[in-house]
Amino acid sequence: MKNLESTIAKAFLEMAEGLENGSYGIKPKIALTGMGSEHGEENAMEAAKMATARGVDVYYIGSLEAEGVTTVHVTDEDEGHKKMEAMVESGEVDGAVTMHFPFPIGVATVGRVVTPGKGREMFITTTTGTSSGDRVEGMIKNAIYGIITAKAAGIQNPTVGILNIAGARQTEMALEQLREGGYDLCWAVSARADGGAVLRGNDVLQGVPDVLVCDSLTGNVLIKMMSAYTTGGSYESVGYGYGPGVGKGYRKLIHIISRASGAPLIANALVYAAEMVRGKLFDVAEKEFSAAEKAGLEQILANRKSSAKAASAEEVICPSAEPCTASIPGIEVMDLEDAAKALWRAGIYAETGMGCTGPLVMMSQANYEKSLEILKKAGYVG
Image (cartoon, rainbow, N blue to C red; front, side, top):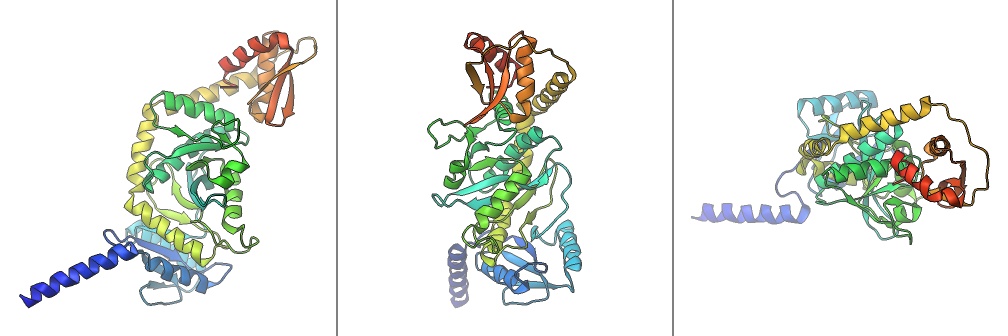
């Protein structure tokens, strides 16, 4: 009887400890490569100890040891990276956090930051890797990657906003077609007076969307700034790093951090990776890709490519000049000339310009309504 009481008491004690440190239930095994950091190997080991206290079973790949952390001894960074890959491939660990990884085309990482305006967490999609060689196609896919990651992190209906960069309007129109086709997409709304799902820098600082869509180069700059804005740039202290690689059919859980990442951020990256294990990232991805394809993703991408090819192949003569007193905003800067030519083709004189909200196509007031109809039909404005 006494043994039974002792066993029950021990079980309750373990349950209480698990609830306190977040380790109750699945305790994911996450590898961390410690060599190569600009802040030394001790910085990475400190992160490993912090993440261990938060319920992650950390396999530290390097030369240091600490209580509660499993060390996999290697002699240098290259050996450590090879060991990490082998451990992930074999299933010895559930995932890994590392400072670099050669993702294949079609796979890109979804970062996670804490925004300074209101302290909200936000996913930046994407931050490293290349989802597509075509900018707009890449951003369309990035939106889906971000939704996948947010859902795996426990956000059931993540809001999606698109950063106001080249490709934003085309991306918005394509995603709206996807939403109308049945894909479950919830738009964020800008905090600025004019609203809309295309967001500005103010919205980034406030963390308006759950998922912020951009290209990887822009996302990389954003996450570096959002991670190190309190330190002057040399030490990334805030956030969760550059995130896991996501792509259709991709099933390796590899999270990226920077060589400038500090211990608190690396610890968060390890916890982020553990959350993706618990949230079954790959199962969520399979479900979301299936839903997007059912809603017409492949056809939307194919139509976009064929329209762009047809527009670039056709020669158009500019009509006689006339005063331009009206304008239509919201056109991609990369599509500006093609949009003007679409009006020329209809016999309408048009010029291109840049307003305070972005690119414009300008025409006479008399031709405004007809021009708007033409540009909408051609897909240049929503």
